[in-house]
Amino acid sequence: MSESELQQLQVLCEAMYCGNKEEQNQAHTILLPLVNNVMNVSKLKNILGSTNHVHTLIFTTSGLLQLITNEWNKIDQKEKDELKEFVISYLYNKGVDLLNLSTNILGNFVRLYVRIVKLSWLENTNYSLITKQVEYFLNSVTSHWIIGLYIYAALIEDMHPQCGVNSAKSRRCAISFRDYVLKDIFKVGIETLEEFVKGSIRIELRIEENRLLIKVLELIYNSLSFDFMGTMINDESSDENISLMIPQSWDIFNEKNIPKLFFDMYELCMSEEDDIRNCCGKYCLRSLILLGSLRKTFFTNEKQKVHYMNEFLGGINKIIEKKIGLNDEDCFHEMCRLIGKIDTSVRLQELSTYSNFLSWCHNIYLFTMGWNEEIGKYLCNS
Image (cartoon, rainbow, N blue to C red; front, side, top):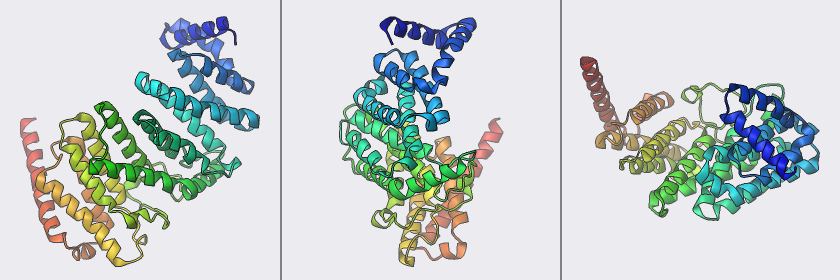
């Protein structure tokens, strides 16, 4: 594409996103054939490498994502490989600029990359390649670290099996991803979160530290909410009703005290008057809700199981006794869900054998009565 053609394309993209209705319709009519023709994959890739124009980047990445999703089997293997290498290189070389300029454009590039990985998953058995590529990000500066976690979180989300024409292939892809890669990604998230709790991660720019923490928690939550059995149930309330079917090979649950890690991180997040950190606290509780539904057959002996569940009772006790974050409406709501999850996941007879049971009952009573008082005040003032 010549310089004049590129400039004309940029003008059309600007009109498509920022022009009046007539200009948008005209630009859409001219631009649509460009992203509907499978023969233009290399051309679109070259456009991405030739421009920094925001709206051109948005249009081209969005168009490429739709094009490869619809026409993957018609794309030449060489073009597939070149596109994949181009996007991951672009993310490494220019991703930091995008992180600071526009997270929307960064998100488009990340989604494009993980979609390529997903579509090519069953074509290439070198499953470790994705983790090797992302390791370059994780072992670099903080901004690259954030982008690496961004890629992992988006990859997990995109790898969920989907209903539809290719549902069987999607399910095979998801199960393979679960068996070969997901465990290692989850481990990266947990180990990074451990460093946060220990205080080992201290980044000069607070905004970067918060971005990193958000992506770590998002990655872990996406890992835990993954459709491990390939059921393809997309009900938003499904985490309230089903068990967490983590594979037996996830020995990290035996090696580390994961519930305590999340309770500790929650306390750290809610100890600061920082909206982003408070949002991270909510993520901690949401992950704990999933962890509370871990299948009963996961642990090989009763001692491990009792220790695991006792950490939940102890963590809930501490939150109620210290009123940690309970003035935050979202966290209060997630806390109610967490208590409900423990109540439905463990029989009362079993709960009564735990060392923290009596104090837990007392604190649940105080929590419930306090909640009733707050509701009463609200009704009186409304």
